[in-house]
Image (cartoon, rainbow, N blue to C red; front, side):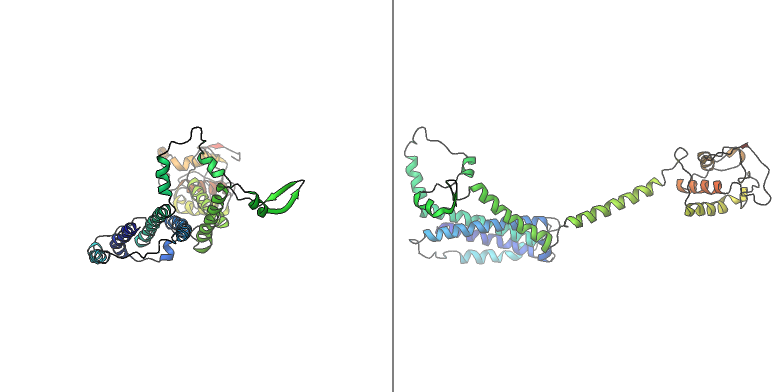
Length: 356
C-alpha cells in the first residue's frame, strides 16, 4: 500500500511540468472549451471513473478497520522540489494544439485527471483484494485441482444473473401483491439492466449539458432551421447557375416584366445602331414585322443573336452577354413584333406567324 501510494504521488508530480507548459498557451474560456465534443467525452469518462472511485473507496473504508496506520510521506518532498524546478524550462517550448478547437490546458487537465483516477481505482482494487484476502484465497485455489465437470459461467450469463433470495430475504422482498397465487417480489435487477440504467443517467447528464446548458449543439427545431437554410442556399445557387445554362436547345420565352425591361435596355445600347431604337430596322432588318431572314422561333432568334451572321455583318454576342441576357434580348424582340414603328424598313425574309 505504501509503495503504491508513493508511485501515484510520483506520477502526479511528473505530470506537473506538462501542466505548467500547457498553461503557457493562449488563454481561452474553460466553459467554452467544455462544449467541445472531446471535452464532453473526457468529462463523461472522468465522471464514470469518479463514481467507480466512490464505490471502491466506500468498500475499502469498510475493510480497513485493521489498517489504521497513517502513510508516511517519505522521500516525496525532495522529489517534488526537483520536479517543480524543471517546470519552468519545459514551459519554454513551443505549444501546439493537441485537439483542434480545445485548449491544451483543459485537455491536459482532463487527461491527467482521468489518469489519476485510473491509478486510484487500481490502488483501491489492489487494496481491497489484499484486505479481503482474495489474493491469499487465489493462491490456495491454484494449489488444488478444480472439481471436474464444474460448469463455467460465460459473460452473457454474468450479465443476466440475478441474486438468489433465501426464505428470510424472500419474505422481506414480498411486495404484498398476489395474482392467482403468484406473489410479486422486489427481486434485484440483473446486471445488464443496472448498467443500462447507469448509462442512461450518464447520457442524460451529457445531453442536458451539451444541448441545454452550453448550447454546443442545435436542438431538433434548430437543426431543421439550419437544414432549411442550407437547402434554400443550395436552391438559390442552383437557380443562379441554371439561369446561365440556357442555350438554343432549351431556351424558353421569358414573360417577366423585369426580364423584358432588361432586354430592352440591352437592345437600345447594343442593337439600336443597326436595327433602330424601336426595332424598325436601318442597316439591319426590321424586327417588328412577321418576316424573318433566319427564323422567327424563340430558339432561332436566340441562336441568331448568340452566333451572329458574320457574312452579313452581324457579330456574335455570346462573348458579350450571358445566356440569361441573350434570353432577355430574345424576349424583348418578340414583344415588339407588330408594334408598327415610324419609318419601318421593307420586309425581308420569310413570313412567320407562329408563336414559338
